[in-house]
Image (cartoon, rainbow, N blue to C red; front, side):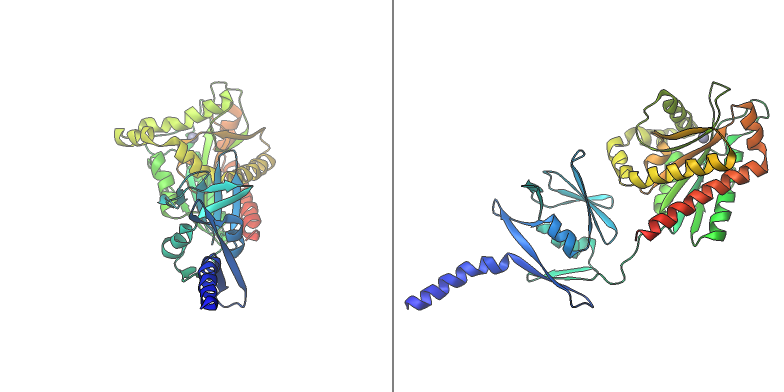
Length: 371
Ligand SMILES: [Zn+2]
């Protein structure tokens, strides 16, 4: 009787022990693993470092922004410190308990596994009876396959207009964009889409929406610069970030000015934008965007012999809604007499296109290799 009592007590004590660990197995693999479950304030949690290993995920913790980016199967889940929401794609999902940080460890609610299995990766993660089955085979790779090239302005919005030859930005950038597309499709295994193929007006919001809808891996907006100072010249490439210098602010104002041509409805849409959220979405690709910006800047200056005005950051509407690495190129100044002359020439336009193409090629080779 006494013996039986001990067995019962032992089983009773042992159940939580057994239950506190999940076995992990992998499809088409002999690999085995386990995932520890932690009880924090009577709630079940998993250590994010354990989950990183088990799912072969990538973890980026940003203490300043208080966010944790967790990339599983090349898709990003974003957690926020002491917060019960996880962002996946464009939606937020409730984890019902806050993320906990303890002794340098990050604990996420166990419920996250249910979301992975039922919502996020149903074909990758199966989760039942304390068993997790993970399918790591034939992982989709993040490769740069689809590129959107955005010739700035168009239609009723001419963009900058040269003083001497009355050269219009919208025409120059369309020529360059078409050439970039041609070079990319001829030499790389990519699909290239233009936000406009002819002289038509496209709203700023529609440009990034186009890129998002086509699930582009890269967004490159092409422009020509203008300044009150007619001596200003050279090449600038921008990535998105709140503008810092007055000069960057001026360029920002110039490009954002295209909104003036849009209908009141879409203007309202912009003013209603949750700027912080949009900036955050774009900042997911900040490192990649800066990288492409630098490559593009170097390539253009080298090929065109223009003045290197350096890599800049400004808060362009046209980059703000893009959920992918995105840059904005200002090839040269239409407000400068000499550069307007250059911009007029097919050869100069083709060389600008060639340098943009080269930097995209370099970027693609680098990021494709990382996968
Ligand atoms: Zn422009």
